[in-house]
Amino acid sequence: MTRFVPAVRAFALLVAAAVLGGASLPTALAGGGEWSISTNATGMNGAKHCLADAAILTQWEHRRAQCTRVVLSGTQERADVQYTCTGGGFGNSKVQVLTPRSVRIQTQGIANGLPFGYTIHARKLGPCPVVKR
Image (cartoon, rainbow, N blue to C red; front, top):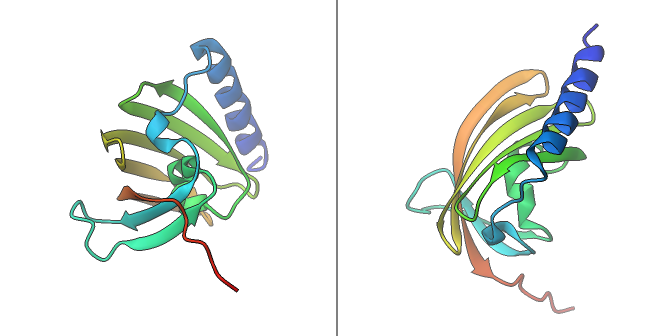
């Protein structure tokens, strides 16, 4: 029965996306680049991450997993995203654009069979640095 629930949830997300008419993420999350990710609003002790696609911020807890994201609602300032990952993890993220280069994401869900919930603050620093060999 537990394997059936994620399949039903994924189907419900796809139906919701079709009904809502394909909402999209804010353009602040378009493309890639280097981002500083922090758990506090000041950005202190932010960790730098080079992201090929900034939309991965909406599933930060599952950033290394293969997930299907559905934008339930979206404007240029806000978005509500649900996602389901292979292996049973899932989550919901609420994105708020603070500036064109700064977003706050409140996220919650289930990872490794346990609940999670936190807020991250992400600031785009620019393009990813070129690694010289």
